[in-house]
Each structure stands twice: as C-alpha cells, then as structure tokens.
Image (tube, rainbow, N blue to C red):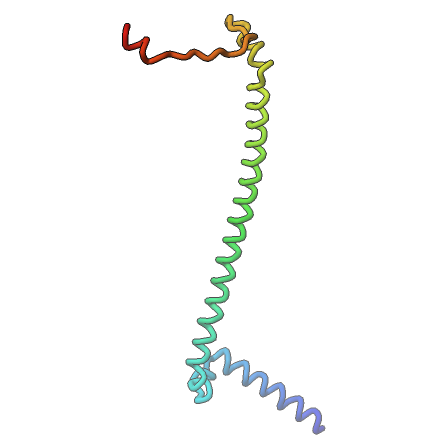
Length: 122
C-alpha cells in the first residue's frame, strides 16, 4: 500500500512540475528571479558560441573552395607553360617560319663598331 501511495505522489509531483513549466509558474518564483541575470548571461554566451561555430564553418568552406580553385589554376598554369615551351623551341619555330620565308641563321653574329669621329665628319 505504501508503495502505491509513493508512486501516486511521485506521479502527482511530475504532473504538477510539468504544469508549472508549461504554465510558466516557475518564472515568478523567487529562486528563478534571482537566477534570471545569470540565465541571460548563459544564453548570450551560448548564442555567441553558436554564431562563432557557424562563422568558422563558413570560413572552412571558403578555404576549401579557394584551395580547389588554386589547384585548378596550378594545373592550368603548368599546361599553358608546357605548351609555350613546346611552341618556343628553336626547331618548331624554324619549321613554322620556313613557310613565311625566314630561314634560321647559320652564321654567328658579328659586332659592328662605329667610331664617333667618323660619324661627326659625315
């Protein structure tokens, strides 16, 4: 019998507690009003932590996207550089310019010296 009474009293307490929470009765208690500034402080801290987490995740996504773009640009740079190196080889240029009529120089370059005295007389 005593066990049944304990169970009934516990269930009544649970119902009463649930009704106080749902009805807002706990908000007017003296204990809660004393703790209210601390609760507001904790709530603000939690909101700051959540905001900070969202900002960090967004920065991480941006960093990942930028890294992918950088890798793509590096690959493109290597491909273009390779194509330029291939196109600027002496043998390739000689073949392309042969159609235009230009020939590869077979004689070494010569240096021409001009005296200043000869140029003043003329």
